[in-house]
Amino acid sequence: MSRACSEGDDAAEGVVVAAVRRRSLAAAAGLRPGDRIVAINGTPLRDAIDFQFHAADDRLRLTVERDAGARRVHVTRRGGDLGVELVPPRPRDIATCANKCVFCFIHQNPRGLRKSLYVKDDDFRLSFLHGNYITLSDLDDAALERIETQRLSPLYVSVHATDPELRHALLGRPRHGAEILPRMERLARAGIRMHAQIVLCPDWNDGAHLERTVVDLHRLHPHVTTAAIVPVGLTRHRERLPQLRLLMKEEARALVATVERWQREFLDALGSRFVFLADEVYLQAGAPLPEADAYEGFPVAEDGIGLVRRFEDELELALSRVRPVTSSRTVTVVTGALYAPRLTRLLEPLTSRGVAAQVVAVPNDFFGRTISVAGLLTGQDIQRHLAGLDRLGDEVLVPAAAVRDADGVFLDDVTPADLARDLGVPVRVVEPAARALLRALRDP
Image (cartoon, rainbow, N blue to C red; front, side):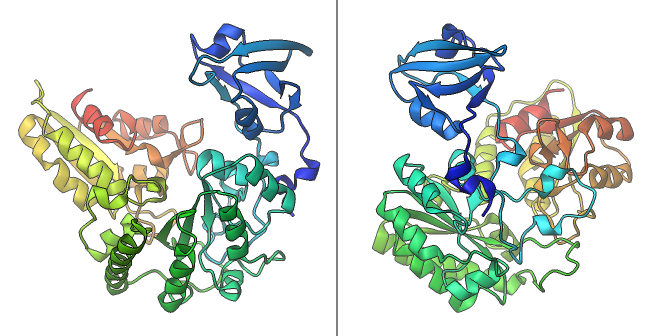
């Protein structure tokens, strides 16, 4: 069993303060970056979840280790949070995945990348804290009891198929083969909300298998709040891996129609559309994206469900309020091959307001041309493609989704500063928000 899945060997080592917000309760109490909080009101802390759980009380007595000594820090809540940011868990403290999923993206990474890119987490704590998807297959009773006791909700669950034999095959026939539905039913009885994910692999879990999975999951609604269907991602680095293929355009169109039918049925029966389809499938199918209200608040936007609709609606609204710039400006906007045509059309109105936005679709040679999303672009692919263009303008904008880790590097360890040096043009990393993009386009 993966290390952090077992509660029996979880040492109470506390949590370390990374930052303290100015004029916060933590600052007033004297907490500092580097402090290790080992207990709250006498209860030892194992991790950030214990900290959140026990720090919810109104009166807190923190046991803090600082400079090899221990001290007590008292905090009285007056609403709001404490103003503390914690150091993220170390790789060795993260529960890793014992499965060998046939579609696992990490198995498709080329050699030579930094070690953190090969870590397969399957940690319920990261699912609760950050929305990471977990299989539930490795959890022991102690972990399940902790989820129930501390009400760790919502969780994000990689389901893929509810047929036990098919799911076992999709997970690579691991040593631990616990069925998914009994575990989800147990969590549902405890009042835990879950968002389910289905990575769709044509010829494996599509067709009747997909319908069975969706029907099985909908019976657990509202505890299973959503079921997200996302297409499998395949790189060119699949040596000695199972045979898989991508959706064809006709299949994508058929899937859109099927999901729309399910949504109508579920909306009548459950009061929710329940099942949602990744933006990538709509784009591949050439189908219109659903309107914003069809995403019911965008609960799984970070899974690529509704991100495009939300961004485009915000961008169109922001564009309607843009005033002409005082001096003309040309900017190169980097994105993936899949979204480039839509972004080009969206930014055309800026031309009449003094900003020429040159949208460049960068092909992904690092992972392979089948990968067409902006978040998986590498620095070397961006550099190679832009170096062949006649003019880059005043600045190059690259998507923040492609820049990883606190060091601010692309997946291949190239930095934006490296790009700027090689291209001879300033390079700016831009968050995937409409206002951030427009601000970067207009303002030097």
